[in-house]
Length: 315
Image (cartoon, rainbow, N blue to C red):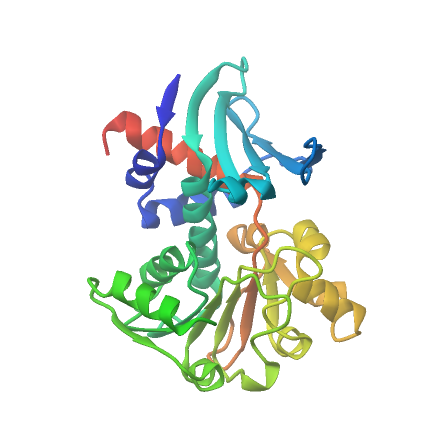
């Protein structure tokens, strides 16, 4: 069985190819059962969590991402989260490859946002605002710059030193990188705003949004989290990665529905709808569009298939 560590996964997932692979997967017949969530008791400590996220193509491949979250690990100086991806044959169940799940998740998540951008942002978008400075942020910057002709990137973070470190990390590219002190001003000036934070209170305000913008919300993945307020959700033409996931896990959407700012049918489409041309996507230059991502096992499967294929082909 093939074993791909983080560096091998990174080398085998060029962003442009990954965006195309996700588009194909969303347009094809992939079965994605509900993920399993188990609590694992730890004697004398906080419980851990085991997450199992399966998906398969009939007669082709199947896979499952296995994620563990053990919060007490940090006391011993170890990561709290570990992820692995097992790719198998959907014909006979035979294991094919074991891949680093963390690197796989970072890259497929950024690629999903870039895929949405190809349908929802303006084709002439050149200014990107990156809100958040975590591990996902550089991947989102590179992915959006692949999907659109981004020239300038502004970074905003709660901690200015973290924003400057991210700017330094990206400084070797052809992009013009700067750090913002004022989030409202940076938001109003951007063509695309990408957010990847752990915010529990909205950072983006609906009154800040301007005609023609595209908003990409990645970070809030529980009903109690939110990166944008309900006015932002109501003002924008709203799209999601999957309807079921967004309605169950997206804090912005759940909260906007609860306060009456939107109703479920205000979601104009999913990535599957866009990939299959059942949803139109952007139709006017002055539209405000918004994409909400919470992740789906379909993306993991498509990324794992591409990584193994590229590795085996020596690309």
